[in-house]
Image 1 (cartoon, rainbow, N blue to C red):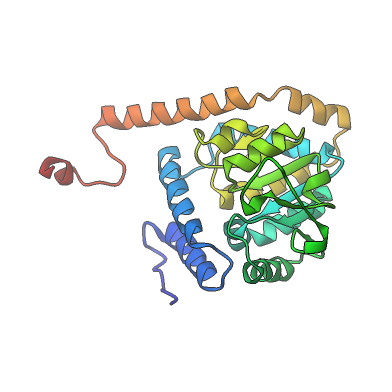
Image 2: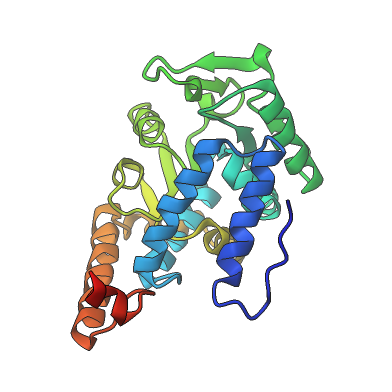
Length: 268
């Protein structure tokens, strides 16, 4: 069911995103759990002020340098990512010469086909991770995410994992791969275990990542490596948490709240 969202609605953008994911659920692209995952992320986006904070821009800069210096980068795609930013995924892959691989926790052939169709419509020429003849299993994992393409993630040196679960991020890092995560929760295992974590909404982060990669394309390898060396994921995550703390403290001191009427607090 499509709902017309008024342009002047204060939550119009958020509601449009939710409608996209609901449509993705109906078309088999998004798993039911994907809706829960999005809601959890949206809660953290409230804490960030629904904006791309300086720490996220810092991570995007480092991630761009890493992708451009990678020998065999791969962009891992799940249902939510395919539904929300397919064009940016394809553009980024073409810019850094990365492979696009479908990797799902809730895996079945109909979902794989639906996600492949979305990526194809966005311009993807080759899609990995759905041909059973080319799949291998990661021994560190027990879920369906253990299945990776022998020509893709298995041999990748850098993997971009937007909207990821923590166990696979940890497994990929243990295999010696650099992992770039896009995760709104700076406390998640994905954020903590990744090499570079972009704490931002994927719909904001992906276009910014494409833009920064294009800006860095003419850089020498040494310059790209220096950008990476100057980045600390642990310190950058601390900056995100500090920003959230300072923002909430300021709101509390001012007597403001996040979207709730004062009478509601009094009533409780």
